[in-house]
Structures are given as structure tokens and as C-alpha cells.
Amino acid sequence: MFKNYLTIAFRNIQRQKLFTFIIVCGLAIGIAACMIISLWVKKELSYDRFHSKADRIFRIERKITRNEIDGRWPITGAKYKQALIDDIPEIKNAVRLWPRAFSIKDKNDNLHRQQLFAVDNSIFDIFDFVLNRGSKATALSKPNTLVLTESCAIKYFGTQDVVGKTLELEMDNKYVNFEITGVLKDVPENSHIHFEMLISFSILSLYMVILLFGGVAFMMSSNYTFFPLLIFTLIRAKIGSLNRGEMCNQLFFFLQLVSLF
Image 1 (cartoon, helix red, strand yellow):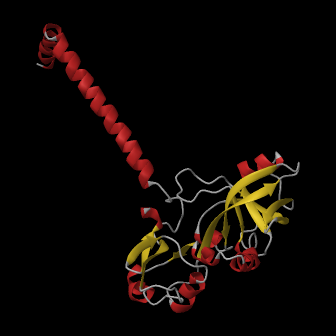
Image 2 (cartoon, helix red, strand yellow):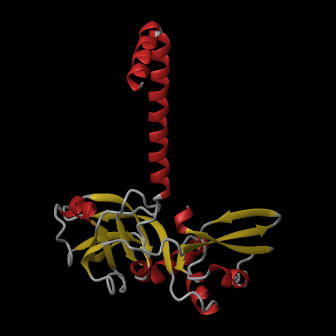
Image 3 (spheres, rainbow, N blue to C red):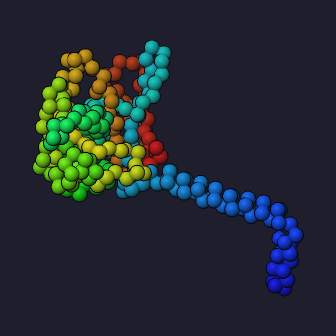
């Protein structure tokens, strides 16, 4: 019987070649489109999933109403990191990421414009960026220290063996030596945080004073602040009490899960 079905199907294909061609092409296009969409969805859902705490790392955001104008930003002031830890017992640790661009002088005195983040050393406790060389416990704990990715190390030095070497970053119109204390594996493509270089946030205490006296007071509100949290519902009511003197009519805070960016 099965052989008869095949015979009938083959005869129909022979008699209706154009119709068969349209059906087969439509089926092939449909399958290909489905596969492409599935691969795209899989990639999108994989963002930040390589972090072991991806399901409980949150970023704090704020909504400010000032002079009847609303604004919502994923950034907060530098002092909110410690405020979160001090005011909310459920939060044990946090990290600030301050995006900056510095002029860097390499070993041949060539100048480069480098995008980077100034971060707390706790970034290695919260995120799973792989440090191949150096110590996670101390890599960015001191001022004037930095870590860079493998590809960035090759760009500046032609080798990944760069721990202990220095790079010069321009700060306040002069070049300051930063010691390289670690080399990171290149950041995965499916990360919403991309960087080639990280510098210690502790150097910015002086740098922020310089900027403040220069009239750039609001730079302290340009930090992305992340923290791990076991139980989200316990702190909803507490987040609203975090205002640290911002001049506005209303101030609201929101939490966004990293894996849902």
C-alpha cells in the first residue's frame, strides 16, 4: 500500500510540476525562516546568562520629576552604592560602573582614545568576567590600577603578558601612570556590558573633586549600579527611601533584572 502512495505522489508531481515547485519552495522558505528566527531568539535570550548570578543581579534605576518634567535613567549617583548596603540589609554587595573615555599613551608614545569603565573591585564578586591573569581579590582595590582584555593587551603591547606594566591615562590635562594588575578574557558577545579596559573606581575620589571645582557637579550621577539579591520582594518598599539629597519634586527607584535587559 505504501508503494502505491509513493507511485500516486510521483505521478501527481509529474503532472503538476509548477504547483509542486511552489509548494516545495514555500515549505523550504518557511523552514529556513523558522530556523533563523529560532536562532535569533536563542541568542537574545542568552544575553548575560553566562553570569552564575544572572537570575538575581539587579540594576537600580531612577525616575525624577523636576519642574513638572519627568525623566527615567538607568544611572544613579556614586554614593547610592553604599546607601544600598547601609539601608537595606538584604543587599550585601554592590558595584558601580562609570563609563568614561580617556586619552591613553602607549609604549611608543602614540595616543589612543579608549572607552572604559571605572569600577569597584566587587565587579569580580558579582559578575563572572574571567580574569586569566591577576588576582580577583585585589586587581582593582588600589588607585591607579587597571585591568584589560586579552585583545586590548595585544593592541597596546603585542602580548598578553602585561601584568606589572603601565599605561599612561590623561587626567586633568596630565598623564598619570596606571599599573596593569590583570588580564581578562575578552567579554562574550552576548553581554550587554562591553569593555576592553577597567580602571579602579578609587582613583576617582580625587578626579571627582577636580571636576566638581571645574563646574561639572552632576558627573556623580552617571554610574550604573548593580547588586545581587536573593529575594526581590523584600526590598520593594525600602528602595523608595534612598534619596540622598537630590534636588527634585519626586524621586522613584526601580529595579531591573540583568538577564531581562
